[in-house]
Image (cartoon, rainbow, N blue to C red):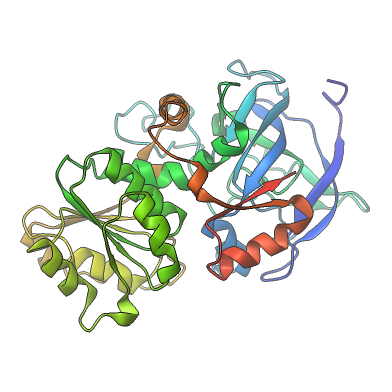
Amino acid sequence: METQGKVITCRAAVAWGAGDALVMEDVKVDPPQRLEVRLRILFTSICHTDLSAWKGENEAQQAYPRILGHEAAGIVESVGEGVEDMKAGDHVIPIFTGECGDCRVCKRDGANLCERYRVDPMKKVMAGDGKTRFFTSKDNKPIYHFLNTSTFSEYTVIDSACVVKVDPRFPLEKMSLLSCGVSTGVGAAWNVANIQPGSTVAIFGLGAVGLAVAEGAKARGASKIIGIDINPDKFPLGREVGISEFINPKECDKTVHERVMEITEGGVEYSFECAGRIEALREAFLSTHSGVGKTVLLGVHASPQLLPIHPMELFQGRSITASVFGGFKPKTQLPLLFTQCLQGQLNLDLFISHQLPFNDINKAMQLLHQGKALRCLIRL
């Protein structure tokens, strides 16, 4: 390509301060360095992690100016020295947590937090040289990265360990959902909880991740899936992914876990906290059946509060764990998930609630913030 090895000037939605509207402006994007890839982003969407960073809920994560975004799909524009598993023109999705393939974690089955390229909300520069690849067009000042990806830009530079090739037969607009939300939910059901046929499930929070958990649980043969959310507008879509019982905590005359106990005669085998609220985590834990219950934490918790669980409660045979990216090793395991989606085992269409042009990215942020959207697919 004519742009290989050269600085590219393109449009990006830049965050200049916590809670401020993203500013659409021209930025400069440097060529990729060793073990890096420069992508042309075609589709991106917004998840609650982006929303949390945009609102500045965690001061330690704040670094401005910054380009947010991590759920996306695109095409490789150029690769840096040492990149051998992809080339210009390949269809790819960026992943916020990478896989080097060589570290102790990558070599271990069931582990997916690579020692070098794992997700780090505090990270704002590239791993190779500790520098940024984005600069303002007017005065050449640095613009910082976000979650290894920074996809709210027409072009971005990413460590090759955080990029996964996609079969060109697969529609990129749908594959973008697998770079975060859907993979996180489905993987939590399949890899982390390892839901067994005939089991019961409770899901706290019916956003995109929660509904993806439900779809994964349904595919694994769960006999009963209970959805908990304060927004009843989410219930019809929940039925489409296999949720048969719904609880609105605002309309319940008892605690949620007491209601779950009634419905399931003692509690569920698996509960998933997808709301990012400490109260929901407590209720999710108490909703599981003593002796066999497992709670999986997926929600982003900006609060400094600690786990609301007494150590002795774990002796009742309940356990709790967390899930990052659904336990998937991105480069090793995602290709099979792509194929399963192409075969119709998962329905990605229902997660796309809106489609908007890049100029409307602030509208997309507001829709998610107001609880009016699952995923806004943004075309760059």
